[in-house]
Image (cartoon, rainbow, N blue to C red; front, side):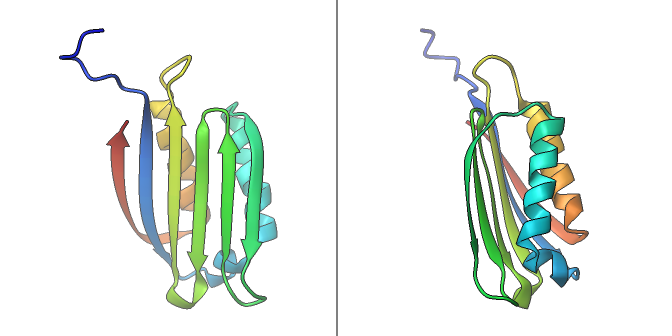
Length: 122
């Protein structure tokens, strides 16, 4: 293996989003449906998922394990804020473009006022 060339195994996008659409930050059931539609649209492969709703008016946590890696969402309606984490590995093909599209679509779902993101090549 050539040690001078770093392997690029995937793209990891970490985002912080503010929104005034508080109902979306509370609506786990609608978000689950949307996540599943995005996964299907981009031909990703869901292994399993974990969800937790904090209270009727509180936020939620969503963790979706993919063959390609994962999607994680944590919402704080009381702060008009969420974090979005999308990581797609490059096992059989370069998934960088798909990772960017998934992040963009998931971000837009929450009607962002502001998005701060970090792209990390793994």
